[in-house]
Length: 400
Image (cartoon, one colour):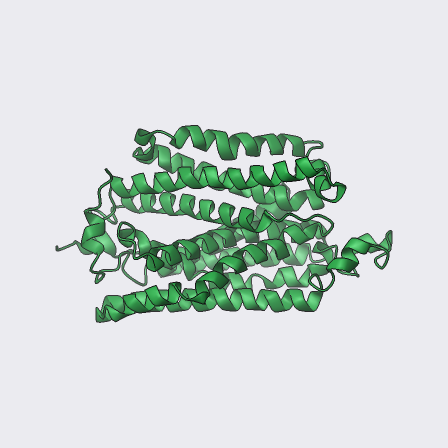
């Protein structure tokens, strides 16, 4: 099969992409300088940081599933996932402002302003959790997370792209063995523990045994939306012609639908268990989100993150409607941001939803870095694994 170079070689101006990354960094640095002593800045920064990081983590999980199960249908789109992984080194560096603002973010640190009016030693729940929630162990876990994620990203990306050059199919066996190893288990647990460390511990009196899976489900759903939108944009620009077809979008639509249901099952189960047990330390988290305009956001999440995508994607025809999938991808990403904001911000804005200058600056900064970096990475290797023996089967994939 002979393919036109335009089909699989992404062309993008290196200077434009680097300007985007640079502009994003400048915007984040300016916001950091302006809000260095402001709690609001660090909460806004954490919200945007985790929103974009969750897309990368979702990509990592999908790549693992692809290689571990030797999936055929996704061979045509696997390189876009691998390109997403290579944003991890950038986001590793972007974690440092969160370290700098730890004492403004995390109430379980003894120097947090909360303890000016409360007794740290007399808080038995905090004292009970100190073996896990302490600065040294928190930083050690963060180092472990990012070390693991970067190891995975570099190994998978360079093994896969090197296979394009050498055509040695042993590389694919190495990737399969790698993803089937204990590393895969560590990946899944690291995603869930990162959610516990950086999001759930913002309110250390509250806990949920469902929260780690909640983090994973939201991350994977967000990546599916990003992947679907990206593939549609590439197709609109003339790339992946005769490679990615309506059949692939049908499968992605099925994934979007399935994980919309899975995510809402986990979120619903978490709520029902807490409501049923009616323990004050657990119910307080939801009570904080049922006051002022946060109550409106709670209802919006129920309607916007479940009912709208559920009824929009339940039909077979809607999963094959490219424009509907494009709109739903944007909608799901929007609702994912609202969800992360709903998790993080009530700890700071206790009564009402608020979107201020720090939220806007951090969101635009991260978006510029993510988009510019992603476009640059895509231009450095073919958009499809050209030497993968299953590529032809992926191109000819059909839903029955």
